[in-house]
Length: 133
Ligand code: CMP
Image (cartoon, rainbow, N blue to C red; front, side, top):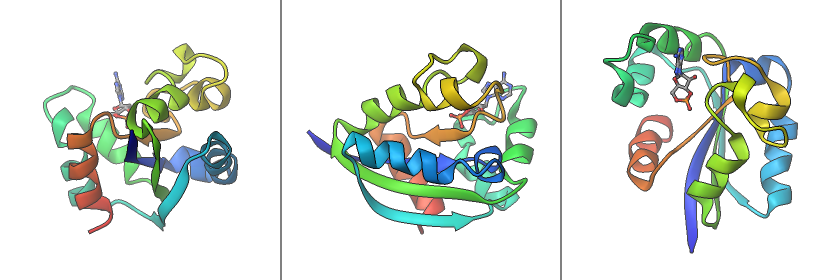
């Protein structure tokens, strides 16, 4: 089923010049890039974007990290996009993520885990309302 999803290369991924490699992986997999945008999250945008986590102990750290530098957001389209993109990015804790996944190949961090991707259609709709409004 053709779907759309959102991924965001986080400030650590941009700083480490991984944007091209990451976009390549999605293109090589067969996804079409529908929208692409570089920007910096404001605190207000970050709090809205990560609202589902606002009671978690790491919420402050999460907002502080995602607002710390430029990010690159992309809307991609393809078969089974939401679940396949989650498989491609790997587990949240990069040190635990399987080799071959983006986090597994490129990182070791938790806040600094290189990439975010929507985990459901509902999250995708909420997230693009913040990022591409
Ligand atoms: P992301 O996919 O962007 O969604 C929520 C983010 O919260 C997650 O990636 C991590 O970067 C971050 N996160 C999850 N668990 C922790 C934690 N225990 N400590 C700090 N950050 C966390």
